[in-house]
Image (cartoon, rainbow, N blue to C red; front, top):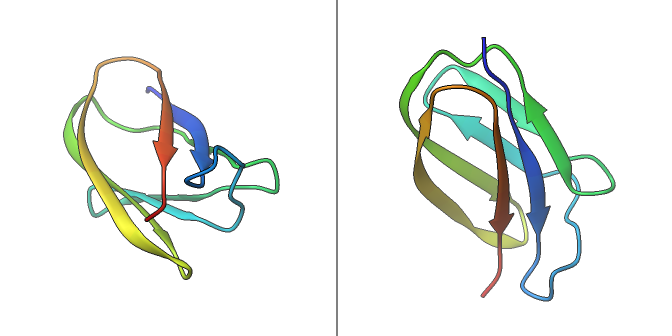
Length: 77
């Protein structure tokens, strides 16, 4: 099954660690110290992906999964 991977950045383009990344209601991952996350075994389909960090407003967008995906998520004001 596909993987959804990517980077989470702040408003200045710096990597953000400890960001919860949620796809739909089933798949959850966390960004590491370099801002990278990877969520494996995501079924093909259309989902809402949300990134949550205690210092920033939640960011959500819709993604279509049909194979591996590489994303960049920007958080900030």
